[in-house]
Length: 213
Image (cartoon, rainbow, N blue to C red):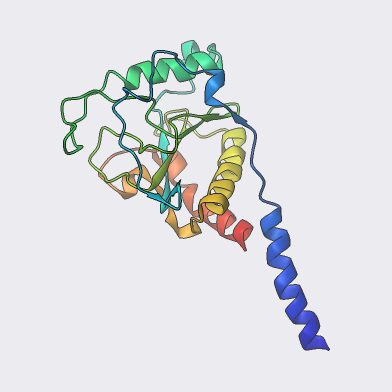
């Protein structure tokens, strides 16, 4: 009898824990999108697809390197923030992608942005790889960027809460393991995402693993 009860609990508890992971509120791309960006003509690299959906193998955390102390950015709406970052990204020239060197980036570089107030915003379509000015292989990686310069600033409590929620949801829906959450500088020599955010990643991994159990 006890064995049957234990077995039943073992089957029910993980299901309950998994059910608690729900999609966080995300500002859709359509709310901020710059009409000049056309997916048909944008320089994007399609992800490999398995069973009609991208096969992801990890989540990579970045920062925008825009300080929280920058009052000009603080006054912008989230739509202005996204369009301005997008415009800046689209000035960048490909340096490392085979076959695309010399061409400009096609869009906002990251799949999701988390603003200082905790708003999560949809960036580049997840059907396409992200972009980076550094040489690392982004195939199969979802890129999440937090707005701030975390060599100077500290992530806000709202940002970290949203990062927890977004990461758990992405890990669940994309079948990504907790140990497959990394920082930009785990892949290549760079200061990104800054020590004040990088130091949070062990906790982020622990929370994600616990949520998935």
